[in-house]
Image 1 (tube, rainbow, N blue to C red):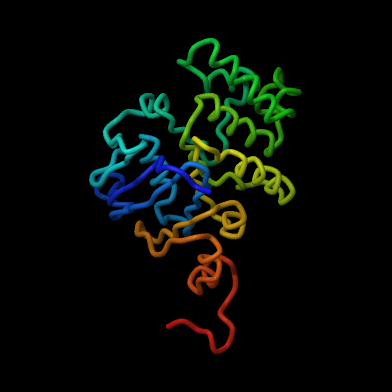
Image 2 (image 1 turned 90 degrees about the vertical axis):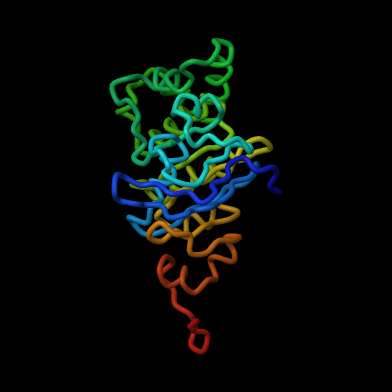
Length: 247
């Protein structure tokens, strides 16, 4: 069951120079839930995550974290406040060890908090514990994804932003990473998941939003979205049965 609102986007407008990528987007992520954002390439999904993380500054609307407007706050402030981005493509620091990658995720925290974060991360990801001294670039794709998630968790976030976590992973590893993602949401944490594979997103998420050319087209529980004719035809490779076409 979902709890209090952690993240709220209200009429968000953002883009790059004269190119507007998001047109008045509104959505909510609550504690205890995984929320997915689906859409085609170029729909504005990654821009939305970057705007929440502070990498892109909005030109309209608001980003609220636990009811506080953080729209103008810089990235380090947002990280300390509880926002963590796991970027597309993992982006681990390949020459550095697993351990040092994790330490970077806890940068700026107290020594005791970092030690607790490391213990929790190694407990959550035993394979990372086994490979703590290895260069991150020698890990498999799935292990690098675990490392990217673990590095984000080192900042003790309440809002976890995941950008295409299944990209480039074998189906078996996608299922394993999916189990990790569903375990991230808790009493004080929620997940906003951007995922190109709608079927994967719907398996993991409680609710979802469909983004098309910077606009939210529809939203609701994932079971409802899965049955939406527009979603089925465009993202799930299915079509309405004869006599059930939607006009």
